[in-house]
Image 1: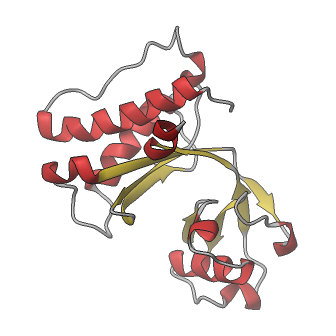
Image 2: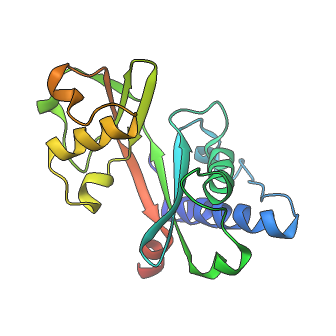
Length: 187
């Protein structure tokens, strides 16, 4: 899905307004889909929150049966309130929170580790009734090689980190259009 700068700004603004709505009691913002039909398309998306460069919350959906705009609004609220790794975001933190949105492609099976392209492919593993997902920007941000990326993915799914060496993983890849408030403010 190709999004314009304006559509990306709308999604980032919608994510921020959705988080603010937790504290104001107002409804999350609505979208005029007649003006922005691409935001009505169903797509998976993740919202990542950082504070002072540190992860503060990240929640999303691999796929969604809702319009992208609504998926981003919902993911933003969950990232701020329901990421089990963190306490809920407090109102006083709002000015410090930076928002990044990742709009996901449809996942596709990947049968060979050599086909994984770092920085391009996000990965999903499904093994032994467990699932783990890492966004494509993770190995770049944490300076991981392919081995470290696969180890982190296994750990995320609750598997031994070297499980990928023992068995070919049931693996899916996806790409993502990733954009943040900081990035769009600079341009």
